[in-house]
Image 1 (cartoon, helix red, strand yellow):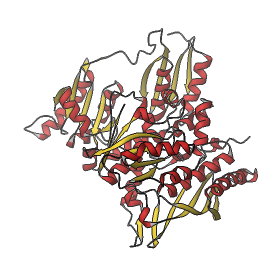
Image 2 (cartoon, each protein chain N blue to C red):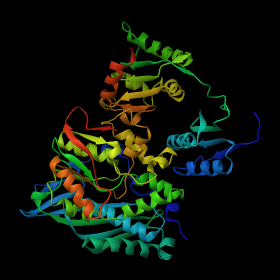
Image 3 (cartoon, one colour):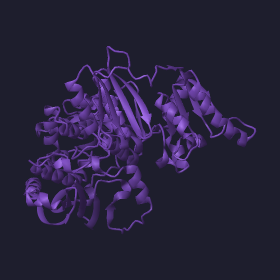
Length: 199
Length: 343
């Protein structure tokens, strides 16, 4: 990878809108450069991504600890950062209904669930969305053993959404560690209109 | 020249503690009330109302925040218009105001606080109320706001509760101050930011006065919890579903472009996380999420009025120079969620 025309904007420690402003300054002065902006919070990550896309950049996002590296490549070039290879999405939507896999032995089911997320990460074709209802929402909260793998799936572009009423019921809404909060309306739409697998 | 916004991390209503955190705190606090209280925070209403007699009640509210603009006079005006707004949103008339000040001493010495207080004073004067006192402390980040007392006839209080199926919703100011405040910090979009600054420093007095000639079933002002948050509060209090038509919402110029380039305040993402009782049509561009959940500083009034009065109310508001007033949606029977948004 050549070092010419590659610029870094390190705005860790800054809050919105500064990361966007600083990235914009560099982009305005160097319209043909590949720019990597480093931020340390999700709001800045989302905002810089929006900025990159609005300017017609290809945007690749890599997470390292709590830092996010957003590499923005002017669109006539291929994406320079190999860390975010194009991946394929199936049209499947998965509905998780509990925090263990299968029936028969719950203990076995909990172990199977760990393996399930590892295999899902390695699968060539990822689901487009994963919904979590009832006790399965415990898998997307901060102290969950599955959280890290589910976060990786989210970073790869799989949409993760947990049922708000369910999070409330288990008293864990404040601890949501990945994805967004959704409602039964969206989940019902998905059950009726999409290629859904219930687990 | 002092840049006030350089002293703060989040300006205006974008500096609020998130509703999801606040609700948890308030749940653990024992309410203190009595029979004279007609409205308090339990109904998510905009101000407290206390009955003095059968024809007189006090409306009380306070609001303060960190600067969202650099001009101290303007900051004072916006803070005052924002604090007074809650009285108008309850259908009341402001009587008195007191200053709430937390300021770094160097800024006080440079005369910045004097400018803020004079700015606020000019807006209070316009409202017809009097400033009767205040309290100040030293603080690292500048904070300014006001506590306002007004009066209302207890039989004519505008509450969040009361929106009726078949009503239409009328909004009196444009949406997008959170995004435009970020654009202001970035020195971008001069037309839209100028509009936003003018809008934030304009009282809701005229809008309220015009509306008093119509049948108001429910009213709120649209502030930090965004158009979605305040619509959900109105819908929940009224046991109805509110249907907002995104393309009918009046917006500041360039808001869509500014949001698309990432000038979205953190509180917008916080609102989105906390307010889940909303269904947004997937046909809408994702940028609408940034707009619908944008925290408003000194935003407009949102009225629920009978359908046959909606057009007339909008016309009357236009005549009173509130040019952006528009019908932005309607009230439907409860369909399982508080708010739905379509094109």
